[in-house]
Image 1 (cartoon, helix red, strand yellow):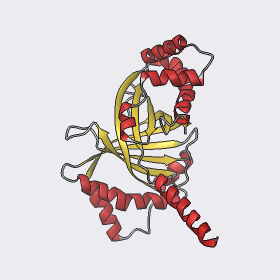
Image 2 (cartoon, one colour; image 1 turned 180 degrees about the vertical axis):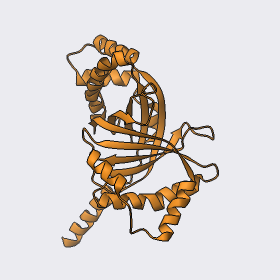
Image 3 (cartoon, rainbow, N blue to C red; image 1 turned 90 degrees about the vertical axis):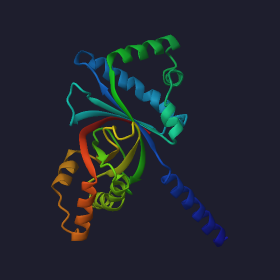
Length: 263
């Protein structure tokens, strides 16, 4: 009986670890909204939250976030970032089709007719402009128990690996910077960190090849992290970090606060 219990426990642990290591695929949408249409768009965003929840419950997607940009871009370029999470690259590329959105809207709002749902979607399309879209795969992340909630803060750092140093850059992120961020998390200076690799667009003309997501529970944690200096690092570790920095260009940094999160 004791051996059986041990085998069962080990089996459960193996399943849990396998799930934890499952890759996540993300679609970022950078959205521009004209000032005279902000209210209509925010109202539509709240309407969409329940629709994405229906999609999560149906296992069509893993989650959806809505972020309001605080700094890092010209306000005329875009003001909002949405992230949709998928469990495989095929679902990421096909995304939620129009018929999917209508189906989940009917589930979330059974009192609405299909015609009313379509009218809402058409009105929303006219109130926003999709400035850009990026397809990405998570390739490394910290060990943490951070849970997003309204008001959470994120720094989205867009990186471009120097030509010929793609593998060198990724190695530095995984072997050097991940440990640095893990140390900050354990000191209570950060919520979570992950490294994403761009799936599309790609090639030498791509504006960026990677993105790091730095999550904080609030502004206090964020500013404390900025002031923190790691006095425990060795000269070898600092040299490795510097080598990693030389292998990439930091193209853009966007600071945003979370307004909605569906899981």
